Image 1 (tube, rainbow, N blue to C red):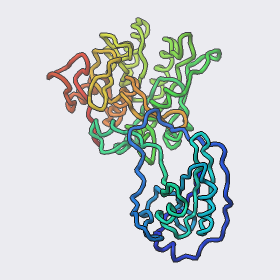
Image 2 (cartoon, rainbow, N blue to C red):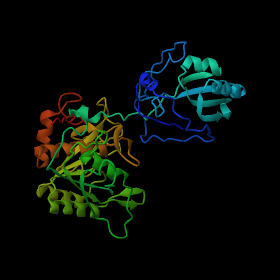
Image 3 (cartoon, rainbow, N blue to C red):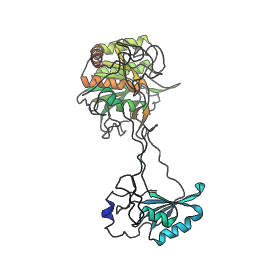
Length: 407
């Protein structure tokens, strides 16, 4: 249990009259559990603040920091670890010096007792001497900040720093949680081509893709690559045998809906087998002026899946932060974009994910930002600024190379 208070200079706090006792000592029998919302932390938690170890009372106080739990008056809380056999004596000795116990936590399995105390002007050395225990400030530890590399990797100054106001995007995917924190401030319209008897798929994938396109996040972690654009998210996925999937009928209906509403760039973060009817529908959609961008697929095959393999579609593979191709990606794509351990919107807030599904939205967003129309125009624009990742020219693993952005 932690009680926090605004950070003030400890020197000023000592000039304030001692606070009346308002918090009774508590015995905590169960730990509170905090689960991080990311799947893999990237950076260590911040270290506790430095402490000068003087011997006199009040001489070894922690430097002002937001990483220390404090009382309302600004004094830093202190934790005292006592062996269970000497806990009562140590606690009594502290009480005799005017120290107030805020929390008493028995650590039975570890053979000790942990006291969180208001030091009442005593320094760490004096507290240690009085209690006979181990003493430290009550440091705060925070969730590791997300590792955000994708924006810098393609040349954007920061996540969400390059916006696309007035642009129109569409995506054909699963359901999208428009109430997610990353999308609450974005212009997202939804539609579906599922039939009444179709069971909806999970919203996780669609929400992640939508946020990569147009996410609005003041903190930047979940900002989209085309923030400010208007997004039409068409749900064509249902729960099928073997997992969520979109059939030819629902995909065709979604492309027709997008064409009718005049969206310019369409993101297709899915892959499957070649299909003559799907090929015809894709050709018709491209003829209507839609710019189609698709993920190459995650089956590790020698050629992209469909619709990425269609000549009217710009295909995208995934690379990691070191620009290495993702081993599970299908080869033969035209361009590469960040798609390995990318921080994406998800349940709660976000987490890390990998796949060509998360690389394709980067290219779709760049197309929207540049206002290009048609696959050939987009190919030419991307090739003009691409960063070659292998031998000069196109290669099977990374295509023409890593796409580059910039505002």
